[in-house]
Amino acid sequence: MKKILMTLGFILISKFSFSQNEGSIARIVKAYDSTSIVAFGERHDQIELIEYYKNLVNDKSFQEKVDDIVLELGNSFYQEVLDRYVSGQNIPFKEVRNVWFSATNSLLQIGNLSAIEILIKHIREVNLNLPKEKQFRVIAADPPVNWNVIKSPSDFYPFLGRRDLHFATIIWNEVIDKKRNAFVIMGRSHLLRNDPKPVNYVNLVDILEARLGKRIFIIRVELDKTIEKTPVIKDIENTNLKEKLIRKNFNQKFKESIDAVIYFKKLNSLLIEPFSDKKDIEELDRRSLIINKSNFQFNSYDYLSYLIKKHGEEGVGIFEQLVKTNNSLISYNEQLVKIFANEIDDMTIKNKILEMVKELKNSKN
Image (cartoon, rainbow, N blue to C red):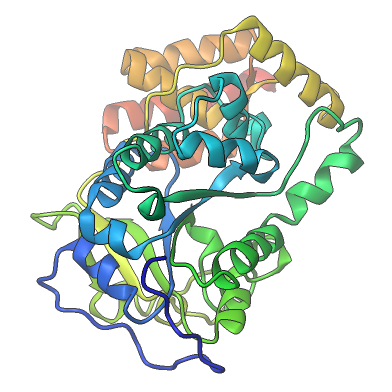
């Protein structure tokens, strides 16, 4: 067992404080001197974040401090399979794959190679070179949905709508009660202290801190193209994010909801090839027909992102033609496309996307 932290009967009010010159991995490791849970609010499937996670689990000081890696997008129904695989046992890959292919976000996937797959494989490789008592455990935090027994939307939605409650239960049972140290990777919206409008109606952070008796350490991923050397972690009080509101129409500031920000100079989405295997499509169609009463469709944000990465500016035109001629392939959502356009730096591509949005809107009228 790695270093165990004594829990207190109350939540500490004191802030986590570090030297601004300290390396980002060293700062994460140091946080475990004051808490047993470091929560990393990420943007999903970003190349730079995947590499950062690899560097973390490769780091000897991180290996000494951390017992568990908790993943939002892993189906806990397959936890036993995941445990065996990560510990180095020979498990058929098609069984392990269900950890991410069959999670509650199943119908939002675009393709096979996701960040969670890459990270799980890497942790397994690291574990093979560690003594058994030092090996990481990977905890799948997503609700235990078994798609083989889902027959109606009412069978599925209780799993989807109670994700954060399940995250809290899993971390409570598997980390806090077992007095282990965990590094938790989840989307940023799930990791906000005192959130006035929490995801799925319950505040994950507040539940964990109440049970733990102290603060967890929350780090939020942000971009800053002006920083010369990244990644760098800054205490929230030393950032321009501290006074900003976490949500519109609510008087809750980031300085009251997170502890630190990790800045990256750039973030690039992983190039994920869309599903093409006939069996995969058939299974996704089966699930979608149960939940949505229609065959599986790729969401417009991910598919447009894929086409632009693959074909550059021409990808916008390819996307437009697919929407016009093969609308069963892509679930076109104007709002998602506009969000994607706003995230693009290339003004030529950005303007072309916005022109496409107008054209598609006019073609419907």
